[in-house]
Image (tube, one colour):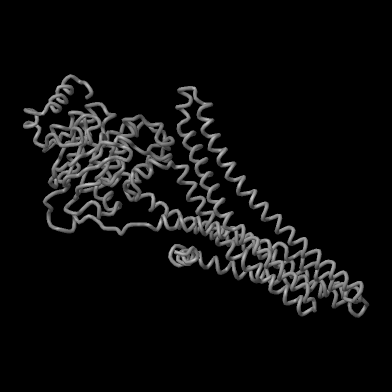
Length: 584
């Protein structure tokens, strides 16, 4: 789709009504300011002629002309302050709209997406999009409107004042100026995209280095870490150097064109005064117009380059966040009872870059309300089942159904709403404990928060906090122990009412006694819900209706615990290790 058409659709569908109001108001203010600036040189010429012919009878007229000239100069100054205010409001509002769309875009991405990008790179991406949008709006509302109005009025005034040759020279200058800028625009756009990519990579490397600075401390690898960052910085510097070298070359040609215009206009006006008897006011008028129009003409050329660059990169960003699949929810609460809550039919999944499948031709079915423990040795494929259910990875063969709906056709938002997922990897915000709980249920009362903490065995931890629920946790939850972070995630689970509970080693950092109490709390709190517990420990085995043993990416057994004990070596190994108090 043409970039200008995308921009038009953006203003129709993405920006709010108040944003469009800000833009229209900015354009109106710009028109008024440009008209005043364009008329000011004409009034200055009139004032000069009046002063040269001054006598007592014309004093009042001179004063009025001078005041009018001052007014024409003052109005744009005042209006420009209003324009800056409107543009700042527009930027804030547009950023809010962009960020909301970008959040939605990130929320539907798979695990593989986030394995390729870090938070620094992603935050830079939306920052650049924000800058691009502001550049487009600023140029369309100010850098186009103002120069066109000023140049148009200047040419008309020069022609009416019988300075046709100067008006033609100015028109030729504008044409040559635009040709030069158009010629360089495509090259500059490609170079700008290259240096923006390099800038994102540099910021991503810096963010990654800061996040993992403890590794450098542990292995005394500061120089090694700094070397990686310096390499990214060097590539960034080279990309920017290519861009700015080309930009300076274009600006030099523009400057030479202006010197030519100014020289021709200046000498011609001077010649008319000396040899043709033209007024000094006309000389002042031409000189004032030549200097006054320097800025708007440059703005017009720079605008073309900037808006072409911004449109191209912003169009890519809009294409990206606009690619949203049609939402389709689960039907578990809208139809009669289902036969299966979860059903895998000959599912195969191979992780990118791996030769062997993590799951190979796996089939199993779990009834609604059933509690199933999924166990097996490390690397057997247990967590892969969870990642498929949470749509973090897409299987390449077979089919997966959740409450009789094909998982591939279910929107990620709906899947997350219906499946309560807790893994051993817990994310915590650098915010209050209250905020970290409300993420799961924003309208929960303090009573509900405290009850969830009770069920997650975190009430004692809360009692030791200086500000209770309003205590700020450290960045990424570093002030919490591994067990406390897991219990925080489980407390979030107790604040929700999903139809499927999916625990992937969610209690691996807990002692056996605490783990048993919390698992029992989960079974009690989510009666009649489907519960899947992925674990390599024996604590949950007695609570299960059935136990599924995964080994080598395949199902080795899927029966009740008593039957599995008679013929499954891994189950007996787990139970034996548990009896001896050992970890499997």
